[in-house]
Length: 192
Image (tube, rainbow, N blue to C red):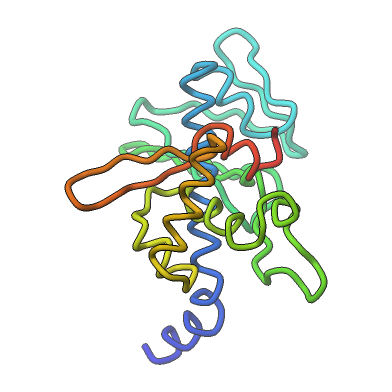
């Protein structure tokens, strides 16, 4: 058990917030694609070259295989670290799982000295980091804690992002919740 804790602390723990943000951005992007273009376009767009031939989804892969789903559903699982062909696990009595490379692979080691995220020049380092966090819904207090800034500073950054229509804000009681808009997601994924 101690070796598992050590592995988590040394390997997974430090980049976990980036892994989670990347997963949330991918999920938000695919949800938006589903709402705007439908299931067929969303599934075909999971990997480059995906297309429909009648009711069959055709994906270009080095190894030819035919997969028939069993009617128990399909779980789409984006991977921030896998960039190979999609992987498929078909289950007879449970949902099948389709693992595919995430739209934007994560830089798990972070930027090297002298390297900047492209949004830093446009938004500033802290504001770009705040936008990256908001692929999941967070409160102003959450933003302040994650970025190690004051709550008033987090509120100012959220206001600037909201004014630029990159995030939306809603109040629930005393909590103020923020999350990315489609434009904010486009900037994060490089699609804008």
